[in-house]
Image 1 (tube, rainbow, N blue to C red):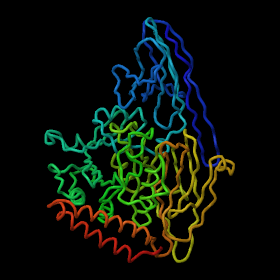
Image 2 (cartoon, rainbow, N blue to C red; image 1 turned 120 degrees about the vertical axis):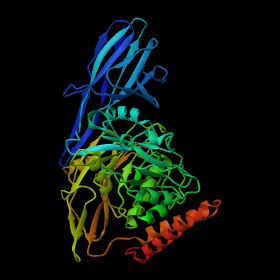
Image 3 (cartoon, helix red, strand yellow; image 1 turned 45 degrees about the horizontal axis):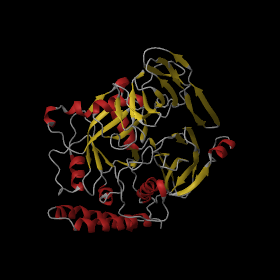
Image 4 (cartoon, helix red, strand yellow; image 1 turned 90 degrees about the vertical axis):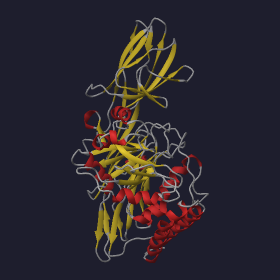
Length: 519
């Protein structure tokens, strides 16, 4: 006999403007007898539509199991419905996920040598971001495009980007258009023309572009950035999108000085699903060695670096990527949601570039300020002020520590979710009298990793005085000089090739310092 235990669905809380609703759900019990296999379908609770899911199966000893015929990555099976599993006699448990808009399901079954069971597990949906105009993407997959495309529906993603650390052996044999974008099911996209510069000192991702030849160690990453951004896109092709994937890399202040960076991955492979197996990272500067500690350190420090970029007066939106295939994280663990009108990849990338986005490793945070999406610039002439009415919709499955509004690196408003709910789910109107930037974010209570959601910045211009922080500029000047010392220790011709870019960055940051408007 195969006995299938009752499946439980993980609850999610939904906070919508003035209301807080708790959603709960359970799968049904099924028991059957037969010939030695268990079969489980996963379906949306309301519509009954079958769902592909990411499923982890464990035996009684806690060992991960592979389902025959399913794609498998780092302990996760891709179940394109139904789950058919054959195994030795014993007890098994499973967890099934279909992206953060659905409840997760967990259950178990027992197999013996003459058993067969079947069941259907319903997953409640608690948000429909596509109906709201939000579409998610993961900008860092190391899994081949055909497999990545199959994982997309299971993670409820619209876009994934497959990056390459090396050039294909026969690039000329593949058409550029075919490599650029492969349509998945249901109009999903896999972009496969992105170069990941993983050489020492770098950490750039150049989307929609591949170098014309092998990239030697002596070629400065900054030169590569210039080559990519000056390349003429083919007719109808997407423009090159330059992204900082490692915000702790040696050459960061040089890239920022170039004015050629389109986005920054603040949630990347330094943050993983279980806090383990993250990318190696070692910042060249640590502004506060005792401030950021423990398992959250990497995430908090990279977020702090990003805030310094904004404090220096640079308007670069955030993005996210999971490192799928190299880290324990599933596709879309770190994701960026873009608000788009037309459902095209061009529209999606344009929204990312303009910062009409939020990034998340769990919570779904949709925010409008005075009815405007993230990336909007609010202006007040003279010595006036700007009144900000912040409305948000939040869906969470993890316990949430607090939500807050950050203005110029300081907390403007903060509340625990229960306090926020008691206040009617409304943030008091904020009155701003100086220029700067603002983000809204949610921090979960997970201690093994830094799991958050944050909007892209809103920008505020009061009078004619932009905000440029002297301390932030000096921070990048210190970083640059440490970078220059490391570059000076390189062999020729790498040292000489990088020198002009280092000098140009020095001039940029010095000019920035001369125009600083606040300490």
